[in-house]
Image (cartoon, rainbow, N blue to C red; front, side, top):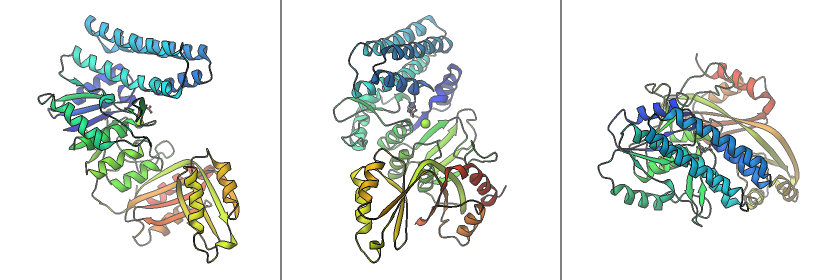
Length: 439
Ligand code: ASP
Ligand code: MG
């Protein structure tokens, strides 16, 4: 069994959906195909929810209608036969009737999540209709029948695995299964989701649940690149990464993969491949437990970082100071990315500013607090880079023109992280690209 996940751009145009059909029928292996919503749809649904949250029904209606016309155009280009088209019309009608009914009832968060689920429901149903039109045998697996999260919004992998196995046992002969990424049920049995970009996470959870041979993440780029292609002209795909390296890169800004999607694959030792629908035979990136290669493999940058420094003369020779500091962040469920300490001060970074004011106020009990917003973390990733001689010097000299606010070194063998003002990010990435890689 393998998992093949296709993102929004891979299903975002009728001709791309046809390509997906080609890709899933290239071999005879049993596969679960996980689809995202058509590109732009989830954003549009978020917009509809926002309009409703502000009680702006007119705007919500406008947005529903504009999305609706997009789908009415889409299915006509996707499907050719009368039978398939009338099926698609019914599907689209059902989902847009639902959205229009919501306009009439009172809005709440649970309904908002129902709205967000429409994208994946539509994409999978339309794709399934295409397979039916082409007489390609496939089974439709509603994700809401097996994907679930607990009260902390954590996926219930054991339950998911049990349910998937029971469902799949009904179809011993079938080869192609179609399901939705992103959506799930929560502990109140309401429709919920795995957060934006969560279809990758779905794919990896399903891969773990069925002990798949491989989880293939199909996108519109030929794998994870060694630097940010939006910033730097010259980048290249990385052929092999370990789970740890990939997790660092995904977390620190490589947009190609949802960071949470690494752990299920890692835990069950299932290789993850990042592949390109436009170049299906390109090798892409393979992520496995193997730690191979040496030296710096890649850079990733994460924006929107805030650094907080707590300076206290009382920290000198004191124990328990760090615990008190961390407890403040824990209390406000704010996770810390980087930490550096000196004898009289500690600096941390966060990216979630929802409780910044409260956090600062409580930290002021322990010392002087300084806040620097608009920072960027550049994460340098590679096998054993933190242990290999000269790497740190090379990193530092590649970025010597820019002031560095924090350095995190030695936390893991695979990573060195640097914090600098966001205004230096692009230039820093370019100069590191020249200094750290052979071209
Ligand atoms: N459709 C969802 C989103 O746009 C999930 C995904 O595509 O991964 O965030
Ligand atoms: Mg994505």
